[in-house]
Image (cartoon, rainbow, N blue to C red; front, side):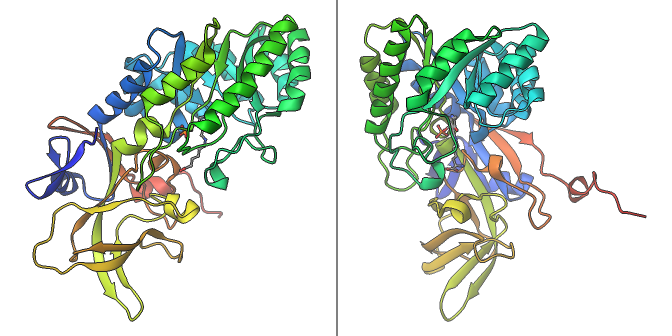
Amino acid sequence: MNPFQLKDGVLHAEEVALDQIAGEFSTPTYVYSRAALESAYTRFAAGFAGTDHLVCFAVKSNPSLAVLNLFARLGAGFDIVSGGELARVLAAGGDPAKVVFSGVGKTEAEMEAALNAGIFCFNVESASELERLNEVAGRLGRVAPVSLRVNPNVDAKTHPYISTGLKNNKFGVAYEDAFSLYQRAASLPNVAVHGVDCHIGSQLTELSPFLDAFDRVLVLVDQLEADGIHIQHIDLGGGIGICYADETPPDFTEYAAAMRQKLGKRAVKLVFEPGRALVGNAGVLLTKVEYLKHTEAKNFAIVDAAMNDLMRPALYDAYHEVLAVRTATEQAAQVYEIVGPVCESGDFLAHDRELALQQGDLLAVMSAGAYGMSMSSNYNTRPRAAEIMVDGDKVHLIRQRETIEQLFALEKIVG
Ligand code: LLP
């Protein structure tokens, strides 16, 4: 579903005109559609109806309490990568018994917090992490449920910065080492082997890498079972891509059917960690054109959102569609660089876009619901954007715009 449609020449989020939101809450502002978020989760989970499964939303893609709370109410679990994300999940009403904890650098304090909360599983990423978890759990008198994140060494065919399943990156345990590390895990008193985990990358637009990774995981599961190490769940990570421009990622039904078919009759719970696919197309970044600047080489539209608000273009050269909130009638369309006010040449949101613009116009940077606000920063002492959730014709402010005073409230001048 696309909740962002033109109605009477004005781009809307569900029933609300985006210029109304800009008028009330100013810009830059992230705007999410509740219906789109709920529909994405419901469609994803529906593919696994009848199969024992747990959908753990990857918090890092959009950690807003309001977003987490919506998913929690639909029965979602959560994939976390820090103590901070655990605290958010709990604050949003998430069920700790449905939380998986991924990440290569878990601290002792984070392990303790997760053990005390009673999470579903630790996705352990190294031999040394396994030993530390065993120690920390022993100290607390608990037994930590674990999966090893195995690195199936498949090419996710995505941007190298977001590809994680190849041998040469920092994630997971090498496939060849996994069996012996499982034997070690099975021998430790304070960890209990529950599952096998893998995550091969993000923004995947083909099914085949998922299937290849699943095949390799199943070989390992069979070896473990033969060795008396019982596997209760298989966590296949996240990574399903979305359409930013003209990509054709697998749809949820196709993905689920392929995964279920591969699982066959095995009595194993399937766990997934989708992030982007549930939130990416449910949000836009609303921004205002401050200035138009025409130079010999280029036309620039200088907008009030910048790389600190949406880092993906600067970091990955990522493409986001940019739409005018109101279709202009008088101006002729020109080709623009859409840039922010930050003092870096890399501060762009989009290249070479044909738009009919005048100063003061509003633009919507599309598909900004995933890794948008979550990767934003205060670079150039810019307060982070406000966040809005639209629900039908209702508008909810789910995060206030930061104030400048808040940005240096924790700082101190040396006397
Ligand atoms: N599970 C693990 C262990 C992960 O590392 C990630 C994402 C996910 C699940 C969720 O992946 P998704 O379903 O969202 O693809 N900042 C980048 C994306 C980084 C993804 C990091 N890991 C971007 O803006 O494209």
